[in-house]
Image (cartoon, rainbow, N blue to C red; front, side, top):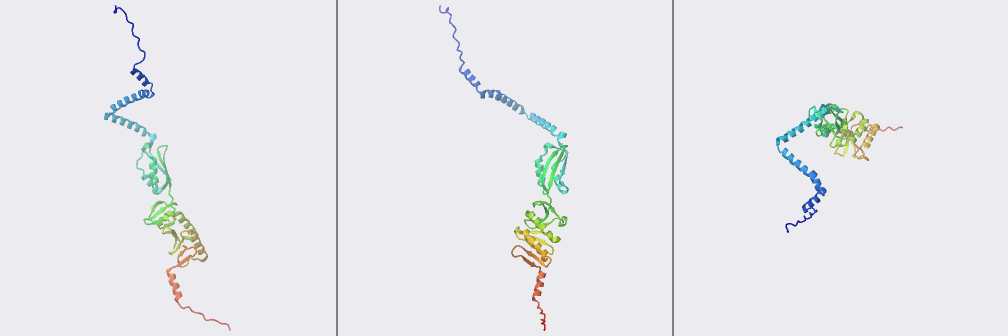
Length: 299
């Protein structure tokens, strides 16, 4: 009898299992979904690339292909520099600028380091400022502002040209090569070129007797004249002291006499030193007997 009785099927529970519920909760997490969408493809691609590039021949082939593609672009005619033009410099300075360029033309513009080229050019003694650019047509344009020499500086190493700021320009073999430039001498003279030029311009009133100015003890100036004469100027107010000496020369012709030194270091007590011959002659006159003229009395 029992076997003939039909049992009703049990009701299926609609709730998910514990693992299914956890998986559904995990799929609702934004980070997990992002990892599935991007992380898994990335890892698969990385693994495939690692396996592919593990072969050295494949790596070399890829490297060569990249190099060939880059060379095909860089060596196109529109990117090639064929010559160099230097403006603002001439003679030896232009030759020195061309000598610092460590390459030969034609050269790809991608291989030129313009800031480094500019640094090398401005490092030259005769260059004040420089600009480097590539002009259309494959021309490497170098524009230079050279240092203009304004004086010759005599130092322990010889003669050198200096500009208005005292910067070294070039070496000089002989003074006669630049007779139009004034001569400076003494330690530290190049650091005070503007002051020296003011003294030289003021001493132009003495004509061609001026031979140059000398920096003494790195403190003050001496103006050197012909006949081994010197005007010793003070540390401060040198220009005013020189103008006083020029005024004395115009009024009393002090420098045309047998004077070796005109010492203006003490403004309140200028000193004139005579030459050795003049001093000896003066002592001889002083030691010789003085003849007295007979007095004439009127009757």
